[in-house]
Length: 320
Image (cartoon, rainbow, N blue to C red):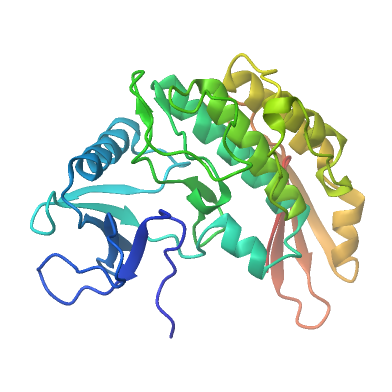
């Protein structure tokens, strides 16, 4: 059986197995700032291997961000520090069993749109949480958006983040960070800019080419993005949002509008006999509208076993 996938945690990390209590050695000839060790079946340890000052500072920033923001359903799970390994200890995190969004879409190009739009909403919710705690991600890109076993998205990699106005030390790759000279002292708008590019990639499967953004030229949007999300992307790139809360509201609206009609979903199970229907409106204390869910009990004609179809307001999930 293949081991768990932990891709996407950092462009400067490599994967090694846990073979001893000693600090792991880089597996390449070039100096690596950190490595990822498998801690157990469900967790990994991110370990600093390069004790230079800048690397140590980035490691401390990442630890600080996790301690400030965790736990939260839209961040990779943080389980504290392991003090008996490496130069500065190890950061214990959940394993992202399905890797990064970038890797997943490369391997599953036919991923349904409702899953993709759900990721967009979840990433927006993560940014609201970061910014409400005065943290700027600064390195937003599809490689740093990870997927758990249920394909829920979480964000990760905060070593280069800005906390309480400090300078950021890491930035997204071309197309995901500004090229107008504002990278050294990022604002919340820098994360919103990156979010627009992430949405572009999630919905189209292609990386945006923004090499001429500083000259006022933006790339055209492919039809797969859709008009509602297309407007969001352009507002992100043009500083059209004052806050990430406004952004999240537009993403919620676009996610709802982009869903296929209920009739098309029920058509997928037209060979089943529906015997019961219940409508639920779950209560929620989260700062967003509760999801309207339809619960339909069906019998498969071959074995008459009951199954459940759950249709959510923003996405549909089948449980057979």
